[in-house]
Image (cartoon, rainbow, N blue to C red; front, side):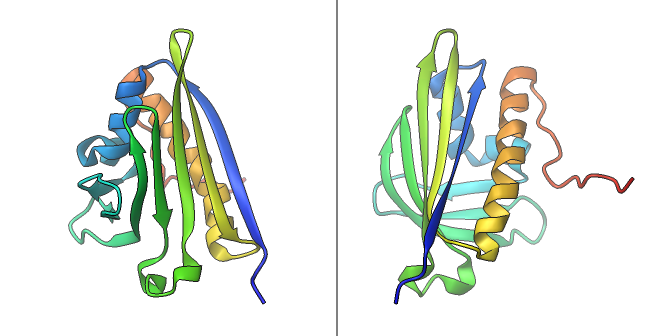
Length: 154
């Protein structure tokens, strides 16, 4: 019996160009400035990619494959914890759709094929909004936000 799947979709508008948004997702030196991680790959269909913590340990937090790439408008990758990488059923999928919209960009991130109720699904729902807000801040102001900051208890 297969497990129930869920998806998460986030849309944001960024005063930037499709090229700059796409580069921010795929270039490690830019991703580290808003995400605290680097997305590392040669960005060819079928290639591996890794989500590497930008610190001394260089911990690989997520692994996957490049499914589709059409700069600067679309990137599709698979996504899994390294500890579950051997299990094809553990992979979810992330699609980045970058579309020019007036003098800005509409970025739609769709993370689907997630196991409903899983820790990964919960983490995705909490994580994408702050990461994409930080991306927007970086591209519009030159400074990302601390994606690992936690709200202070009242």
